[in-house]
Length: 107
Image: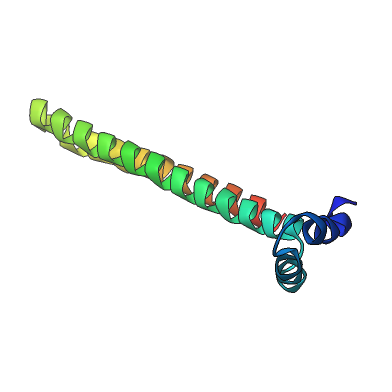
């Protein structure tokens, strides 16, 4: 409702209202532009947040593995098998964030 009234209000109250109203008509309504921007932000936050969390988790995981193997070298094989499980689960959090961002972007 307001999107149809928006160009008329700009033309009436803004000094260069005709130019702004023409730009709004060419590029689409302000609501559509806002939706596209929100979708892009959601994708960036989903993928970026997931990547930041996964990066921190993987860094912490491998740091603790190095400490563990240094303290108990005889447990190296068992620690390494647990390490790869932790790596896979931590990396999955990135994909959850990416999928969440894609869902927000396309829906």
